[in-house]
Length: 197
Image 1 (tube, rainbow, N blue to C red):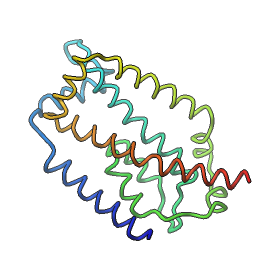
Image 2 (cartoon, rainbow, N blue to C red; image 1 turned 180 degrees about the horizontal axis):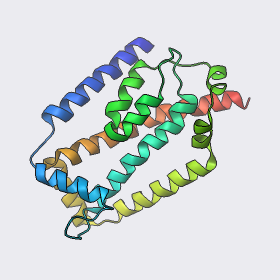
Image 3 (spheres, rainbow, N blue to C red; image 1 turned 45 degrees about the vertical axis):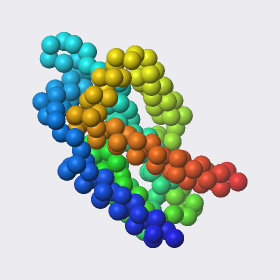
Image 4 (cartoon, rainbow, N blue to C red; image 1 turned 90 degrees about the vertical axis):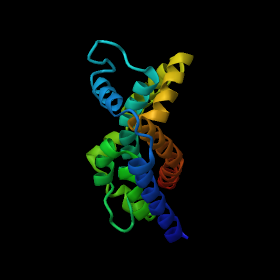
């Protein structure tokens, strides 16, 4: 039932937060700070060196996920129990899956008529071909950048994954959001199919 599903998501969220805060590897605190500063500086550290391409690509993709989820949750992911999606989507820019999983746990299916009569200018833009095109183009470029980074870059990234809490949690965050996306894409597609008859 939907209640069991919602409880399962809520329990998973609790485990995810516990693991991220208490159990994730944390052997590179200084490296984490340096990586974050460099990522916010366009992928270049204080010495003018480019940081790991795989890490930087993933960091930027994690900035895209909130936009992509906003395009799915704000127009067609409205909850029947009136829980608003926008606070969770907004917080996901900083907390990723840690912010979206509680909404998924609280969400209940909404009727198609109620979804479409609630559309705003923001959701209309997020649904537009321009927004989708920009997101896909950037995602394609970042994927290319990561996949062509080379063996040494991937080996270095794996080293960060096992030592850096920032890299480790961000990678798991990406995995969770990626695995959750098909459900919301199908939900969105189903509602649009009904709308278009």
